[in-house]
Length: 141
Image (cartoon, rainbow, N blue to C red; front, side, top):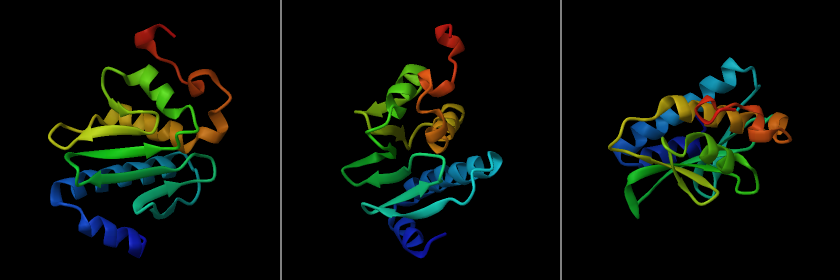
């Protein structure tokens, strides 16, 4: 782990740190499984950020003003959150066009989160496709 990122993780409360470390692990796992190359890990706006050449950056954070949640942030200039909302509006909570809000008191909705991370990490390959090339059986397409 990048030293600056590690220092940032060390500043989080224990329950938030555990959740954020799990999200970090999922990003790295997906990048490995999909052979997306090196994951650049850094701090952007004071938040741990993860990017690969094929995707749009993903940032993670916990905010003192909302201590019961952590966040997955995505580039608001993409169609990522709109797509996530279309696919997972019943399972996930969103903040505008930039974040997924994850309650620290609820189990991590791992399946939709992994799919959202996969779409973000492969965004450059998919951005021209409706719903980023994914299907939603629940919605009939």
